[in-house]
Amino acid sequence: MSGYEMIEVETGKTSMTDITSKVRDCIRRSGVRDGICVIFSMHTTAGITINENADPDVQRDMLYGLDKAFPIRDEYRHAEGNSHAHLRTSCVGPSTTVIVSDGEPVLGTWQGIYLCEFDGPRRRKVLVKTLSG
Ligand code: ZN
Image (tube, rainbow, N blue to C red):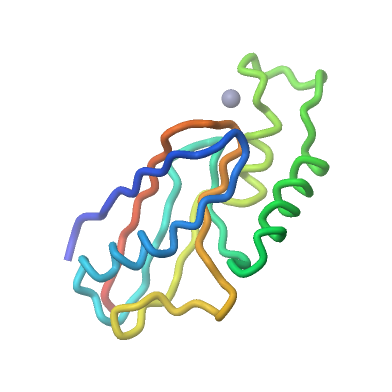
């Protein structure tokens, strides 16, 4: 099996968008029953993470914490003025991998897959590749 799917996501200024159901759909369409699924953000100021999907305050607190850890600073040299977003993105990372079993992503009860936006609002592209094995 070859190829991959692209998920497009409309984001906020800084936001976490739950893309779990879209990833689930990609896995189903792949026809893979057992294997792994790679979820990859094609951007330098938006990352991918897995975290709690029950209490929305967790997402708010994560964005707040990353804002405090990597604030906007005058000292940065990058002409775009969004070095804080580049730093937050590398902290979160560009991708994640989930195990696929019986055609479904194996996630903990409270886990969801999120696209993390740090320099929006924008239309973001996320690649999803499911491999059998
Ligand atoms: Zn930049």
